[in-house]
Image 1: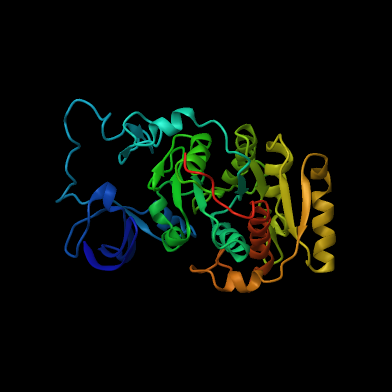
Image 2: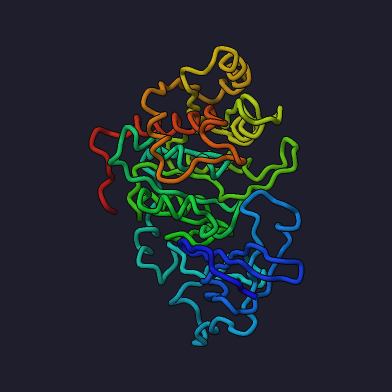
Length: 361
């Protein structure tokens, strides 16, 4: 039973729920299950909580058995209200309006959109890079319109991310793609998500990353962020300018993630089949810089390594409107990780014309 409501953010409500084993922290998505209040009985999924997964430590509300949400309108069609089914064939599958389907006000624009017009696209394998990349962009180009394309390798509901809720006023919009949902716009693929960012949200720069809570097995290929390499391919296919946010760390205790993470080396070195710019902080400590240079050497046959100055980026990161955290480490504990993401944003900003902003489609 719901004991109390702790806090709310866009699309989500955090609860304290009493169970036979004691009080637990739970998360509800009102768009899927309705709005719980103290005294409600709730059906919980506690799988991630029992496993001790690191993304929030929540049980998830599956239903309010005594107060179910209303049935969908029974008019024989969902065409007018959308017919994109995401989290397909799961009990809580939402039916949504896709940005490019016939009922969408953006259908005409999307029906003819086929190029990104050389738009810079910054790609990252972790959701935690998002605010740091954004800080790097806005440090030099505070006027830049930045969209976020969220892929489905991590959390499916965009509502899970408190980071994303806190960045809402600093982004021109979020587009959830694939099985992910809950963005300002819904798209079926990364390709349509990128096109919507450019032609519907009129973005100058787009950031692509999975939602929080990635899947990893500790093997070279068994990581959901490896799909970032496919997003590089999609960006070039559509006429965009891909910029890889390298995952570099001197704070991660795991050897496979120290220096350049093996995930970045796999995504850019084996999955991406087309060139991208790979920015690197220009002032890394000498021993780490040597390690990074050696790790990236095999990638230089395809990609362009770009050294980017970091002056002013620490202040931009410290001024982030949301806390910076990756795997429980903050800016001071893993400075190199966040500064590496920020230089990717700075490089993207440098590619914009002096007067940013595409003409509305």
